[in-house]
Image 1 (cartoon, protein in one colour):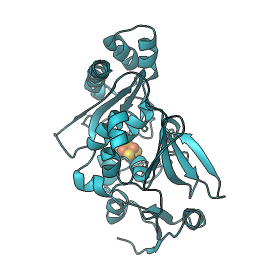
Image 2: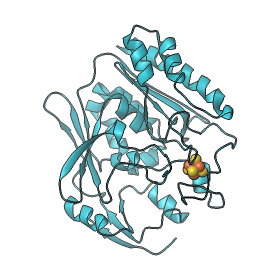
Image 3: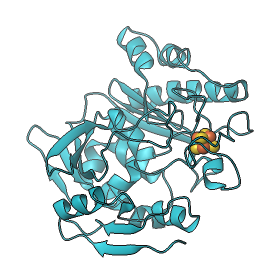
Image 4: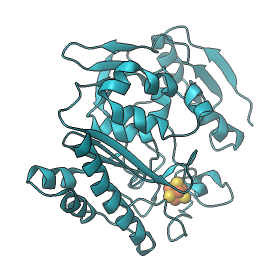
Amino acid sequence: MKPFTYERAQDAQAAVKAVADNPGARFLAGGTNLLDLMKLEIETPTHLVDVGRLPFAGVEEMAGGGLKIGGAMTNSKLANHPAVRERYPVLARAILSGASGQLRNKATNAGNLLQRTRCGYFYDTAKPCNKREPGSGCAAIGAPGGYGAIFGASPACIATHTSDMAVALVALDASVETMTPDGATRAIKVEDLHRLPGETPQVETHLAAGELITAITLPPPPPGGQAYAKVRDRASYAHGLAMVAVAGNRVALGAVAAKPWRASAAETALEGGGSPDEAAQAQIATAQAEDRLTHKLTLVRRLTAATIEDARRTS
Ligand code: SF4
């Protein structure tokens, strides 16, 4: 591991300034992704600003019936919060589908959204990877396995975003609240937080350098049922081959693109009176996948239809 310096932030504005003023600095909170990447020397920050003890770790009721969730709250605490379990079961279920109990006890909500891809070639420093080393190529294109994107990929990168929590947040129409380097705050829909790879897969979000996610806001739960489903290679502690979250009339997919993917075509089909099967089919008709990923189209279609049906049974 490369040498680095460390400071524990005393307040959010100082933390944001410390990272914005130093191109080699990174925020550290739970560390469940960053520390692994540092050990592999894929991430080589020269300075860490620890924001894990800033006072953004609670859940507040919002006027109108929504919730405001602290960015520094752990995934375990959020999944077990009574208001989340009762009103946003799709979110609790999604979080509990991710990682292991030990990791969820450390991982924060903001860090979960900003976790980097689990593409195996990104972690294998002997292989070319445009995300790790821009311009080096992409070892994943044409390689075996079912982890590639079927929506929004580019010739530079086909990696997927594998956060379970983010998929549920898109289905729930959640937003993040941030503090920007000039001390202002802004809100960004989770749906719009991440970028597609294009020619710059190493740039993964629309956050400015040093911009800190302080909270996640959930609107009131939508009418209708909620459901979450995940398919993975083994029963626990594995990132997904495909995930689906349904909340009322909204449908989101995971592990299918570089960002949690709003299934707009499926939603449109449902609004038009289509069945879950027809909605899933409409969504898959918009996919673009390598031939080796055609099995994933079938998997996502079936999982989408089944999860919509599950949500209807709970409404
Ligand atoms: Fe790297 Fe993206 Fe290719 Fe994976 S898919 S090897 S992350 S460029």
